[in-house]
Image 1 (cartoon, rainbow, N blue to C red):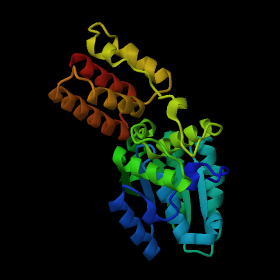
Image 2 (cartoon, helix red, strand yellow):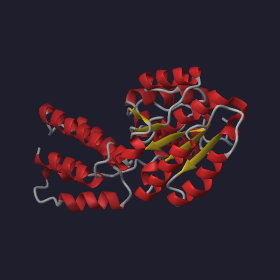
Image 3 (spheres, rainbow, N blue to C red):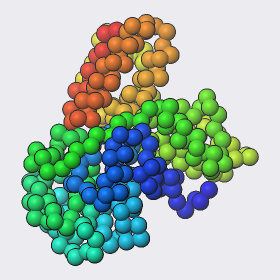
Image 4 (cartoon, rainbow, N blue to C red):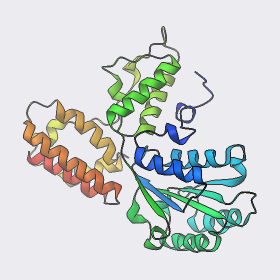
Length: 309
């Protein structure tokens, strides 16, 4: 393994054909690149679904060795939104290029204030003749309507655990590392990027303990320690306090979802009908969060559902 390159970067798709689990929109992007005709675009969906990788792959296929001259990558959460728009975006948009247009990739745009987004809208209007924008976010409802109306909007689907497992196994085969099939599910977090980072973590933790390239998961600490029995059997459970504590500790709905999913599947005290109801509600809540609903409200809702069942 090339230890100088993180696995998440080493195995980032370099072309659109390598993007996984997004076949419908991937084919649209391939046609756009083929025709060299791109609109302004908004990519939204959960973490680790391929939004940023798709944007970069589009640009690499369009510009090849001239990528750096024609593409500006920015993360809206790193800096003041207004300053990004006024200084970096405006200056880059004004640059002259030999190509038909340049591309600005703006990641985590849902972190921008309303004022920053309105300033961005004005820049988009002014420089549309020579600049295209790819706006990336998790929560589409945090993007102002004037931006939505000026962009083609694409939703990225969450990847199934089965597909994530296939990708992890492919990486492990190429890196010549072995993890027992019974343990690989511990790495999978309903988010491809996070799952690959988990693989990177156990490779690092095992760096001095590898025998015949086999990685031992005894060093791998699962993310959330939830006592499922406390949720099921505690009639006096303060669900708001329980949920608030989880969020204050830095856990997300996806963290909770991944742990509860496994706990519920193997819990013999919950009948199959109740399991089906719980999973249906979890899927609905996840979809709401992706579309901008509150994590606190939805996590509390799921804890209540489990507690009542």
